[in-house]
Length: 310
Length: 268
Image (cartoon, rainbow over all chains, first blue to last red; front, side):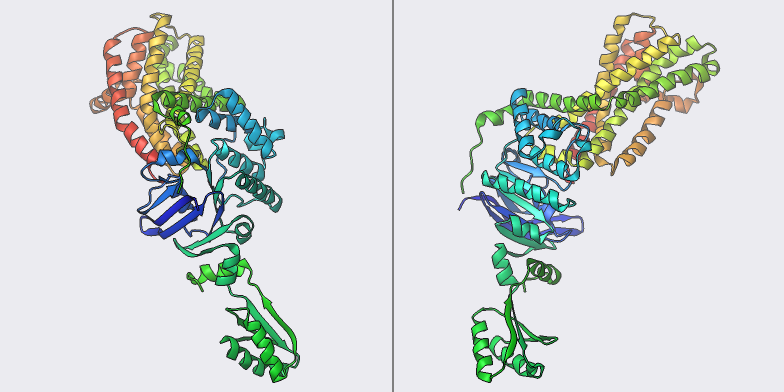
């Protein structure tokens, strides 16, 4: 595996507050890492350290093998950054915004213009190319901002809450663009408060809260391992509830009663067949017997409320 | 782990003094394109000196010097300095707006010279300064101000304004980077700039002030620059005030440029 981003034990304090206590990351080249966490979890601090805007107090980070503290210029050669607020110049047109960055990065006027028009076309902004950015909608501004971060043809891009404040339509468009960049081989680290976003875009998710990693894995493993599936049994006869509960506890080791349902969070879905067999042996008829996968939302709440893996 | 090699040619184009100059020019170009899109900026910048010339010529001239012409000969160079100081204050506001919008974060994440975004803005604001001074001189002449030396003395005057405003801009850049929001900068900049221009001999002869204040006025760089411009355009000593202005500019630069650069690199 080729790592595009690696971080070990990143820590950062701002005065009295510890923004990060210890964060480790490893992002494989060409993949998307979703850095998930509530407001104030430290997501932006991680991005700013990786993008060379902030020095960590402790720990090390490498982007394409370059140390972000020792050789920030080498890191800047390969990264693109879009912050939480679209960093476009409102009074300039779309094409001028991109032309400006192309020229700043040392390209010829013709080359810069070509790149600008190409990016605007790819991001559905051709029609608005010659309008000042202040006339753009929120979604268009975000797309222009993303285009701006791609002018230098970065191999790693950092997207800090790229879709915050966008309507679902604009958000879907932006997601599609991000997927397109990944198909071109770009590595993406995106921060988000939205599980759906992480679930839809990310190959791997790192959940952080209070400045440290509380869980990581693919969306599937997080759902499976951290939030365990729930077995639900509803006996046909409500009077059998207590017997069912006792039986479930015997097999799985726990139960909760919710109305006419007996619920238990299972470690192993094989428990399901054991429960079925035992219910059958006991002669209890059931109206419903199911396994429900947890939603990523439940996982996220569990992780960030308790602050520790369940 | 494999590091993907960056073409060496591209890296070279982004570093070194030549690249820094080109990048500064690009940042300045951005500012000028902004003016193209909102020409009202030119009115905003121009209106203040115009109002001041008329105000001083009609409201204050009689009290100050008896005749309008006599007072304009004295005060127009002072107003040029005031314009310089006010245009410099704009640098702070623009700088702060760019910081607030996240544009500086983007600049800092790019493989470009660290000073180019600052120098580019200072250069662009010099264009604004030239515009406001030209407007001011035109209005002054309309109201009977005359260049008594020679028109070609405007060249050293503009060069001196460039040196002085470049030096003072770093103080402005510092204010722009440190202040919380543009309103805050405005209050800070004007809170400092107004006493700086009024506790000088820009508008009033220093002999009319109490002795202790005269001491302050004489070390105020605004007085030095006003005296230089008087010497250049109206007549009188030139070498001495110009030398003093250049020394003051050097001091401003040496003090504020490192502080501004530190604030720029400082973590936000």
